Length: 462
Image 1: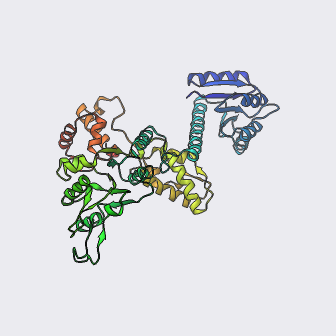
Image 2 (image 1 turned 135 degrees about the vertical axis):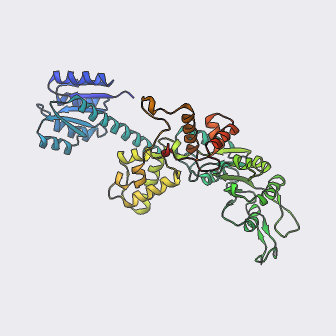
Image 3 (image 1 turned 90 degrees about the vertical axis):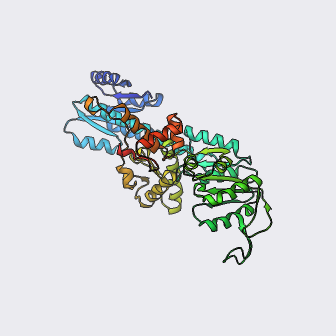
């Protein structure tokens, strides 16, 4: 981005010196020698920051600050004041100046203050754009996101929503797999009919079979009455089989047969019943790995994986984090009846930098906590959870040029593979696609690292 700086000082030589240094920093600038000329320039030109002297005739630096804050509050002002004149500097800050430097000006300090001001303005503008978009964007109604990966997801959902094809949704915990399933249902011709969901990991095997397929009276000890299963209850609607990776092996053949023949037989029943249900399955597990290890049937995997939908983790969605956070701020401010209108720049930086292993669910909880605790009209750094404040991301590479500190190529490969695996939540099939290697090649390397079926190494352990 090209920034434009307005320099204001009644000393032309000082203006020239500052402009020359800014050119070395690849920053564009224009200078004027009077506060009135600066106000006129701000009305007709586009500027990102103002650097102004305080002691000027007619329109002083203080008055210029006040005018900028009143008419262009998006432009930060840096004031230059004589050394030791602290009262004047404080007055400038109270008038709305972003920062101040003392004269004689140390150019390095001025550049640091200027870059900080530009970063502040850029982030403020970004947050404003994101806040505006929250009100106008309706990406599948249930979702908020403008990143490239979410645009691809929305396009895929639009194309498959109004079909009856079986969908397998994969993604880390907290990414919104059930929301995707509901979105598919709401955008289909079945939207006025039932949407039912069952968590395959929440029931013992016998109860899960009854939950899915139903049972007849007397089929087992506690079966005092007949009960229709979810396949029948959801007839003509949509059935979500959540956490399908935890479906017991003994039930997988019965589910496969039901999906193939579109008929089910209740436990203890003698007659089959037809059903018309769109089936969507979801899991945070690597089903391809489970299949290779014999924990999931080949034929059932292929029957469910007709259309695979992968939900990206929040850490790969860029500034979607701020869009979603803003959405939650509005929601929880309304719920708690508090006048919380946004997020400060410093807090926003922390949200962007954090890895969000719990994805949208973790972000939602963090914003709910922040809105509940804050004493201000914007969420501050102190309102952000401690682990978000303390987070320090790391890369799998070592900075530096000392040969004794540089690892061999084999070690770099190991670090990078484990870094990618951690980035995709341990999903080996997805990691293989990112690395562009065969899955079996990846599996062999992981075995040589002693990884096997252990959780992926933390990024902070490299």
